[in-house]
Amino acid sequence: MDYNFYALISRLKNIDRWALMRNADRENVMEHSHMVAVLAQALAVIRRDVLGLPCSPDRCAAAALLHDATEIFTGDMPTPVKYHDEEMRRAYRKVEEGAVTKLLSGLPEAMRAEYEGLLRDEGGVRDIVKAADTLSAYIKCLEELKTGNMEFKSAADSTLLKLRRMDMPEVDYFLDNFIGGFEKTIDELSI
Image 1 (cartoon, rainbow, N blue to C red):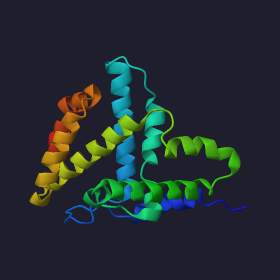
Image 2 (cartoon, rainbow, N blue to C red):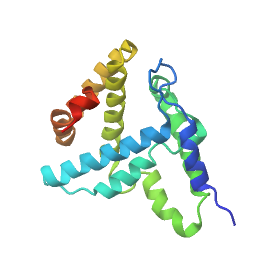
Image 3 (tube, rainbow, N blue to C red):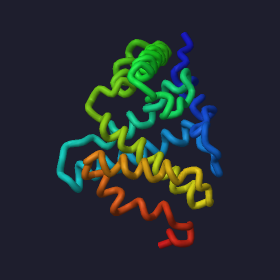
Image 4 (cartoon, one colour):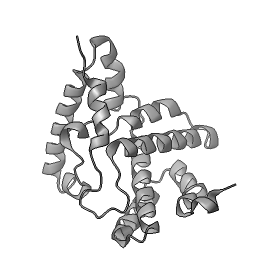
């Protein structure tokens, strides 16, 4: 039997992000998911190794790779639309749940439990993945601002405020120690 889970996941590269904004550098969901995985692993390592709290960097990275997998069926819904009101949130959650079910049906039964845990955020990694997702959005804003695209100024300001209000020491640590590098040129980054 042919299963389609991985073929569907490969389609994430065809879904553009930030569709309502003018982008100097286009980003697709697959690229975004990779960056969110890198950031989720970093936040988990900070939580575990710097803050001394239990956390699984591997699990966080794996969950982050698939955090937007449902967008294969839903597309990248702009945040202001997706979270407009409670009715819209409930409706979107229902659509996402249907997408998760459809994705899981593309796997052999023996593999579903592992992916179900990642797609449905079982294992307590949601806060790390959400923070990494927001960090990724902030980094995108910084990159756009570096090109002179002021359309991302308001998004950068509100996203940074959201990150600071998360009250997550690992996020603050990342912002204080790593975010400055994203504002530099490649020559400035050379060691």
